Image (cartoon, rainbow, N blue to C red; front, side, top):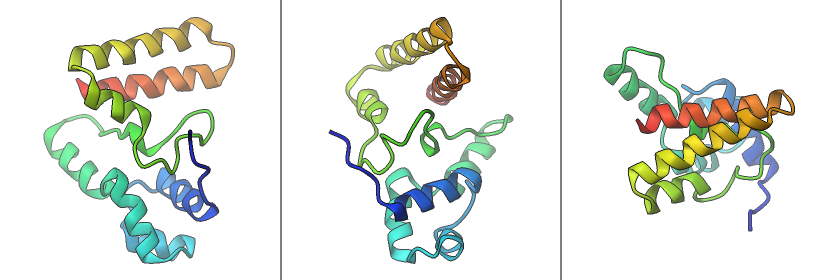
Length: 131
């Protein structure tokens, strides 16, 4: 069962989605949320700035961090472990890649609206990170 995220967490996530390279201090200052709270929340996903810098060194293309955003609602925001992170831990790499590919196909096949295309793109982003 998903827990509802707090208004503070929503402020932090909204800011991080637009400013992925922000430090906890920058996020705290911009959102008015305490540094300690921001730090703990950002620690759950890693420090985006460090992740981006490390990926930028190892790849020529612009790094993407699929876990920093969610498409189609906020039902996973604030969970201690995102479902696809749990699946990735429990499945083999091939199984997880298959799961991601299956969801890409599902959202492309049904394409009722732009949200479905965004979801397919989000799964593609995660697939590129995994491969």
